[in-house]
Image 1 (cartoon, rainbow, N blue to C red):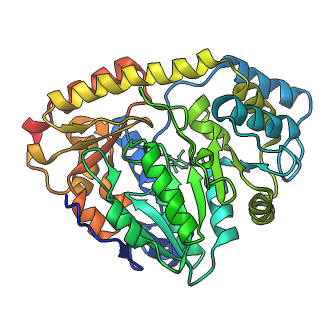
Image 2 (cartoon, protein in one colour; image 1 turned 90 degrees about the horizontal axis):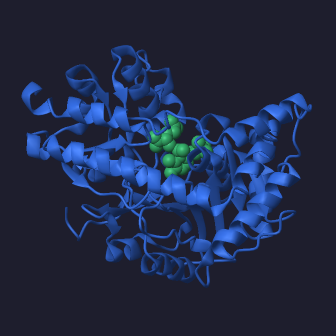
Length: 408
Ligand code: PMP
Ligand code: GLN
C-alpha cells in the first residue's frame, strides 16, 4: 500500500468490456455474470457456506412481511405511481428527519426505485454523458463501473488504503478535474466496511463545490454501523443543493429480494432521476412499498438491535478469520469483513476464491474484482467475507477456514 497512489483513468477493465455487451456473448459466458452470481452458484454447487454475496440467511421483521401479504390481499397489485406510493415517500421523509434532521418534501424530493441498483443507474444516466468523468473511491461496488461505462462516461478512481481504508486525500484531490461531473460516494463502504468520518465528507463536499460536481451518495448500509454514527453527506453544509442520496430496504430490513430503494435530494435533481427511472422500470413493486413504509417507522430499538446483533456476528467471524491465520481489517460498518490472505502465502485472491469452496467449504468474494488493474494489484491478497448469517453458521465457517492453511 502506498500513500502516493495516483488516481487512474482506465477504460479497459474486464467488467467495463462486459458492460458494453461484447463479453456477454463470449462463448463460455465467463464474463456474463457478476462475481456475486458466480460465487453464489459455486457455493450452491459445492454445498459451501456462502459468505460471498451479501444477503442475510434470516428474513426481516414479521410485521413487515405481514404488511406485504396484507397489501397483496387488499389488491395493491397494479402499477404504483412512477415516483412511488405516497405512504412510502412520506415514511422515507419521516425517517430522514428522525435520524438526520433532513426534511425532504415527499412530493418533489423523494422517489422510490427498484432497489438502490436502479437508483444508481437512473442517477448516473440522468447526470452524465460521454466525455464526463465520474469519480469513485476504489475498491468500488461493481454496478458503479458497469453503469458509468453504459453511460459512456469515464470512471476515475481514488484509492482507499488498507488497513482502515480511508482515502489518500492528496490522490482524491488530484482525481477531481474540469470534467468531473459526479462524485459517487458509498458510505458505509462496500466492500471495505469503512465508515467515513465527518472530515472526509467535508473534504469531498468542498472539492465537489470547487469543481461544481454533483454528489451521488449510496448509503444503503446507513444503519449497519458499529460504535460510530452514520453521517449522511447531505447533512454537511454546502452539500444539500448538489447531493442525491440513495438508500434501500434490502440491508436495513433484511429483504434483499424485494428490491425497494429510494432517492432523496433537491427537486430538480430528483426530477431528472425520475425521468430516467420512468424508462427503466416506470414504477416499482406496489405491495412491497407500503410494507417498507411500516418498516421505516419501526422504533429506534429496532435500529439499535440490528447494529448490535451484526456487531456480535462481525466479532465472531473476525475472531475465526484471525484464528485461521488471516489478517482482519475490522469494519466499522456494512456486513463485510476484508481479510488479508498473504500470511498464508496467498498471492492471488481471485484464484483462491474460485478454489475456496472446494478446499474448505466456504465461499467469499475476492476484493480485486472491485478494482481497476492498479487497485487490483494493491488488493490482490484480500478476500471479502459476509457476516450477515446465523451465529452457528459463522462459527462453522470459521472452523472450516481454520483448516485452510493445511489444505493449500
Ligand atoms: N449499493 C451497495 C453499496 C450495495 O452493497 C448494494 C447491494 N445491496 C446495492 C447498492 C444494491 O442494493 P439493492 O439490492 O437495493 O439494489
Ligand atoms: N450488494 C451485494 C454484495 O455486495 C450483492 C448484490 C448483488 O448480487 N448484486 O454482496
